[in-house]
Amino acid sequence: MYTRLAILVIAFSILSGCVDNSDIFEFEFETMGTVAGGIAYSYPDAGQLVEATFDSVNTCLSSWTDDSELGALNLASADQKITISSWLNSCLTVSEEIHRNSGGAFDPTAGPLMRLWGFYRRQGHLPSETEIDSCLALLGGYEHNQNSVTKTHAETKFDFGGIAKGFAVDRAVANLKAEGMKNGLIDLGGNIYCLGSPKDRNYWSVGIKDPLNKNRIVARVEMSNKAIATSGAYERFVEIDGVRYGHIMNPVTGKPATGLLSATVIADSGIIADGLSTALFVLGPEKARELLKNYYQEVEAILIIQDKEKARILVTPGLRGDIELLEEYRDRYLISSFSR
Ligand code: ADP
Ligand code: MG
Image 1 (cartoon, rainbow, N blue to C red):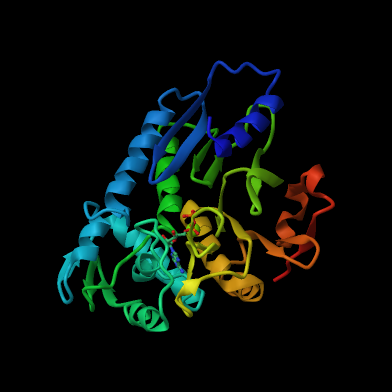
Image 2 (tube, rainbow, N blue to C red):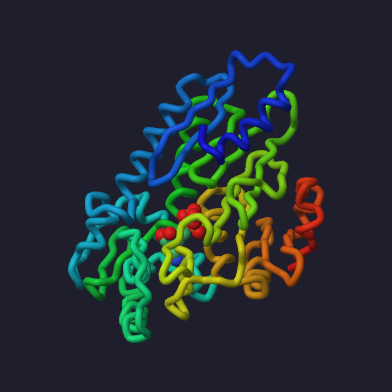
């Protein structure tokens, strides 16, 4: 059992110690470069359906292979008009909305920066300012019109790593609901959707990882019929001369974003939770506050920042009653309100 799901399942098993577990089905598999899993009530085939859904999304939207639809678009030359599928269109449309609202902090064309810093080959490279500048010139180098994309530079490359997992979770939830499933939980590499509730409770309890020790959880959040996603530099990084560089790029500087330890978003859909958590991570607390205030009043967020002595967990007021700091963290972490 992998750590992330184990955390959820342990809580679940303890809480449901006295209910009949015979119609509860747990599943787990690897996909999209991460671990996926879940818990389904009353639907034995849930795991197969979720796995097939994630595989189809990966075939369409993976940034890591030339064989996906996105990979083919990345290989296209400048001025070639490429017809895109409805899934690619949806992801690009939401990406553009978050790009606009975040003043460019979220950028679906961060591909050249990811490559430059060595994330695709998993071997870090500390680039020169000239190298960074030539990548920055490629960002946003495309036109998107009614189901087609035309790149203006051949070297402009899309990377949906910041949004595709949330989109995949939404597709899986839609498929499960269509099969009549009412209660369950899906986790795709930390992009989680909580459908309904466990049998004996009104809410699912989801762990928030400690960004300073990703094998532990620092707090729990209670939620139902919502998606949650977390972005943190600790999940994926390259090491250059003993320094760790995280995988989320600041498209203004062309360098990895460093302002926060982690950013978590709870939203109605996985795609918004995923895309927005990446954007908040890039923006840092003050600009994150503006973004939430101006465009995402209905969304809740948890930002973890390093303060002098204690790490601080900034929580939007709508979440205050639903979040609990774990006892062993109470002397090291401080929860404070994050009003917008
Ligand atoms: P995770 O992949 O750990 O769930 P995120 O959802 O925050 O974390 O996505 C980070 C990924 O998003 C990176 O690995 C990269 O593929 C892509 N990315 C990096 N920088 C940006 C950015 N500024 N805007 C949008 N996507 C980005
Ligand atoms: Mg994301």
